Image 1: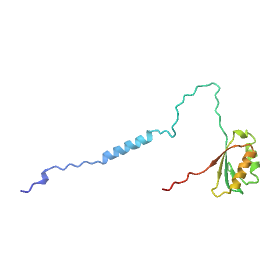
Image 2: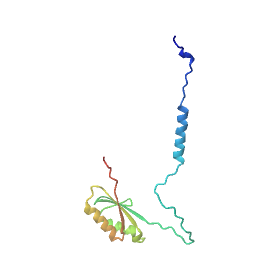
Image 3: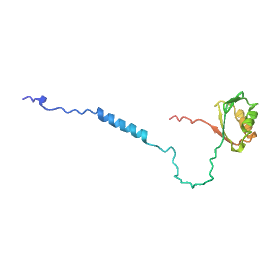
Length: 138
Protein backbone atom coordinates (compact mmCIF):
# COMPACT_ATOMS: atom_id res chain seq x y z
CA UNK A 1 0.00 0.00 0.00
CA UNK A 2 2.88 2.32 -0.44
CA UNK A 3 2.24 5.32 -2.59
CA UNK A 4 4.56 6.21 -5.36
CA UNK A 5 5.74 9.81 -4.82
CA UNK A 6 7.82 9.84 -7.95
CA UNK A 7 4.80 10.45 -10.11
CA UNK A 8 3.82 13.78 -8.54
CA UNK A 9 5.68 16.70 -10.17
CA UNK A 10 7.76 18.95 -7.92
CA UNK A 11 7.36 22.62 -8.68
CA UNK A 12 10.31 24.91 -7.87
CA UNK A 13 10.36 28.58 -8.62
CA UNK A 14 13.70 30.17 -9.32
CA UNK A 15 13.45 33.62 -7.69
CA UNK A 16 16.89 34.82 -8.74
CA UNK A 17 15.74 36.64 -11.92
CA UNK A 18 12.86 38.24 -10.01
CA UNK A 19 15.21 39.50 -7.30
CA UNK A 20 17.59 40.85 -9.96
CA UNK A 21 14.81 42.79 -11.67
CA UNK A 22 13.51 44.23 -8.39
CA UNK A 23 17.02 45.29 -7.39
CA UNK A 24 17.52 47.01 -10.75
CA UNK A 25 14.20 48.83 -10.35
CA UNK A 26 15.13 50.00 -6.86
CA UNK A 27 18.49 51.29 -8.10
CA UNK A 28 16.81 53.01 -11.05
CA UNK A 29 14.32 54.83 -8.82
CA UNK A 30 17.03 55.80 -6.32
CA UNK A 31 19.12 57.38 -9.08
CA UNK A 32 16.32 59.16 -10.93
CA UNK A 33 14.40 60.47 -7.93
CA UNK A 34 15.20 63.96 -6.73
CA UNK A 35 14.75 64.79 -3.09
CA UNK A 36 14.11 68.19 -1.62
CA UNK A 37 16.81 68.92 0.91
CA UNK A 38 14.93 71.67 2.68
CA UNK A 39 11.24 72.38 2.60
CA UNK A 40 10.42 75.78 1.29
CA UNK A 41 7.87 77.98 -0.33
CA UNK A 42 7.56 77.84 -4.09
CA UNK A 43 7.82 81.54 -4.82
CA UNK A 44 7.60 83.06 -8.28
CA UNK A 45 9.60 86.29 -8.14
CA UNK A 46 8.80 89.19 -10.47
CA UNK A 47 11.24 89.91 -13.26
CA UNK A 48 13.34 93.04 -13.56
CA UNK A 49 15.55 94.43 -16.30
CA UNK A 50 17.97 95.96 -13.79
CA UNK A 51 18.31 92.97 -11.45
CA UNK A 52 21.80 92.24 -10.12
CA UNK A 53 23.38 89.27 -8.43
CA UNK A 54 24.82 90.17 -5.05
CA UNK A 55 27.67 88.08 -3.73
CA UNK A 56 28.92 88.36 -0.18
CA UNK A 57 32.68 87.91 0.14
CA UNK A 58 33.64 85.30 2.70
CA UNK A 59 36.68 85.30 4.95
CA UNK A 60 37.72 82.08 6.71
CA UNK A 61 39.81 82.37 9.88
CA UNK A 62 41.18 79.21 11.52
CA UNK A 63 42.70 79.51 15.00
CA UNK A 64 45.06 76.73 16.10
CA UNK A 65 47.21 78.65 18.62
CA UNK A 66 48.47 82.21 19.09
CA UNK A 67 51.39 81.41 16.76
CA UNK A 68 49.29 79.59 14.13
CA UNK A 69 46.30 81.46 12.71
CA UNK A 70 45.19 81.01 9.11
CA UNK A 71 43.36 83.72 7.17
CA UNK A 72 42.18 82.16 3.90
CA UNK A 73 45.15 79.73 3.85
CA UNK A 74 47.62 82.50 4.76
CA UNK A 75 49.50 81.55 7.92
CA UNK A 76 49.98 84.31 10.47
CA UNK A 77 50.15 84.83 14.23
CA UNK A 78 48.15 86.91 16.69
CA UNK A 79 50.48 89.93 16.58
CA UNK A 80 50.37 90.30 12.79
CA UNK A 81 46.71 89.25 12.40
CA UNK A 82 45.41 92.83 12.23
CA UNK A 83 47.77 93.77 9.40
CA UNK A 84 46.86 90.63 7.41
CA UNK A 85 43.16 91.36 7.90
CA UNK A 86 43.74 94.99 6.91
CA UNK A 87 45.33 93.90 3.62
CA UNK A 88 42.50 91.46 2.97
CA UNK A 89 39.76 94.03 3.68
CA UNK A 90 41.44 97.04 2.05
CA UNK A 91 39.84 96.66 -1.40
CA UNK A 92 36.25 96.15 -0.28
CA UNK A 93 33.63 97.36 2.16
CA UNK A 94 34.25 95.60 5.49
CA UNK A 95 30.54 95.63 6.35
CA UNK A 96 29.87 93.37 3.35
CA UNK A 97 32.44 90.72 4.34
CA UNK A 98 31.19 87.64 6.15
CA UNK A 99 33.83 86.02 8.36
CA UNK A 100 33.78 82.40 9.50
CA UNK A 101 35.84 81.68 12.59
CA UNK A 102 36.99 78.16 13.34
CA UNK A 103 38.80 77.48 16.58
CA UNK A 104 40.52 74.36 17.85
CA UNK A 105 38.52 72.74 20.67
CA UNK A 106 41.35 73.35 23.15
CA UNK A 107 41.99 76.96 22.13
CA UNK A 108 42.01 79.51 24.91
CA UNK A 109 38.94 81.67 25.29
CA UNK A 110 41.10 84.80 25.42
CA UNK A 111 42.68 83.86 22.08
CA UNK A 112 39.28 83.55 20.38
CA UNK A 113 38.21 86.91 21.86
CA UNK A 114 41.44 88.51 20.62
CA UNK A 115 40.78 87.21 17.09
CA UNK A 116 37.19 88.52 17.27
CA UNK A 117 38.56 91.90 18.39
CA UNK A 118 41.00 91.95 15.45
CA UNK A 119 38.11 91.24 13.06
CA UNK A 120 36.01 94.02 14.56
CA UNK A 121 38.93 96.47 14.54
CA UNK A 122 39.06 95.99 10.75
CA UNK A 123 35.31 96.62 10.42
CA UNK A 124 34.19 92.99 10.02
CA UNK A 125 31.15 92.52 12.22
CA UNK A 126 29.39 89.63 10.49
CA UNK A 127 31.21 86.71 12.13
CA UNK A 128 30.00 83.13 12.38
CA UNK A 129 31.51 80.53 14.68
CA UNK A 130 31.91 76.98 13.36
CA UNK A 131 31.21 74.06 15.69
CA UNK A 132 30.70 70.36 15.18
CA UNK A 133 27.54 68.50 16.05
CA UNK A 134 27.76 66.63 19.31
CA UNK A 135 27.12 62.89 19.14
CA UNK A 136 24.18 61.85 21.25
CA UNK A 137 24.83 58.69 23.26
CA UNK A 138 21.79 56.77 24.34
